[in-house]
Length: 105
Image (cartoon, rainbow, N blue to C red; front, side):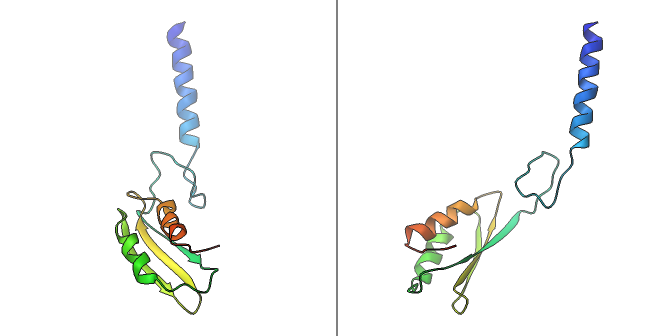
């Protein structure tokens, strides 16, 4: 009787796990068999117009593990950061920008 309940439970659990699949549109979902891109990027629009210390900020970004590159568009007031998401999170980069008194959207 115990074996039968355990067997039914394991079949049920297997069905639930297999029926849940990776959804490429949802970046927040995590399943062990889902493959995500290792390189991620995000763009931040800068609100304050007196931004001039891009070189200093880029040097601080380079100190974060997983940082790959950054690009600053002066015309659009936008910073694009490319990083390895297995080594760091986007909040690490946003914290550097906040620490340097950059207001962003």
